[in-house]
Image (tube, rainbow, N blue to C red; front, side, top):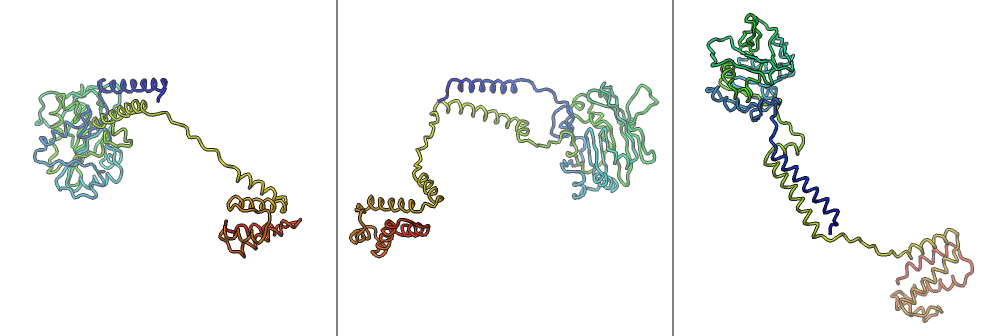
Length: 395
């Protein structure tokens, strides 16, 4: 049975755990303002709304999610001739191998659409571009517009929260067409944020404000601007990148995955509660553990061995032989109930019959013992021979 102190500790632990669970379940979850842009994230800067509405924007196109590395996908896959690869993230930094495959993809007549504040130095060098970003913590109100007057908007698009101004500060004017800019107080100053770069038979559509495609701004009256930006994509098949995303799930801990899934979280808490209840009720029914009492060990054999070793080390063979003979004769008396005071021919016959040994073997042993008892000095050879004969004698 549990003592009073153990019960109090368990009750305190149970109440504390229950309070934590109730607090976690009841309190409102804080808004997650991290950038994600994944198709399944419903946080403000996720891409759930845009991906759900994409079929209405690309009515004549098939949309496929690509969860592979762009290099792996373009290297190993057979893609459509008139297709578009769409990258939307706060940073699209491609390595050399990825850039090489992306350039081949565009050169063969396809479109690469990227909406990101940072495009990586390898791609920028390949397309002869320079970008600049203002990471001022004071959020600036931005009003992006398109040069194409045919793409009308019902109202001016306004972006402020979580947005940083990123512009193209230098472009290759021979291959680049300006598509969009930030509206500023100085009409003569055009800060480009959307351009088209011809590359081989295809093109790059580069946009510097990925927030325009986030849940937060699509649900706050800026959906028309996002649709106008994407209207430059004309492809039979759209490849939606789901690999280069800030919110891409990389699970390293089993507990992190469990606590991110509401059903698994509930199952985890129920399991903890069940274990607590089990401990409380099981403890009341269990008897206190009874200590195992080890029986006293018989050390007679060890003691005898120690004494024998002591005699042997001092070469007191006569003493050892005398004790060995005494012990052997005592064993005969207690086992076969015969008198061992005199070693006669009748004694030998009786012992042979009771022990099951031959008369010759029994006679040889007993005569050897009688001779040893008559000698006053004994050698090591005598001791070894006696031990050998006793061991060979079947008791």
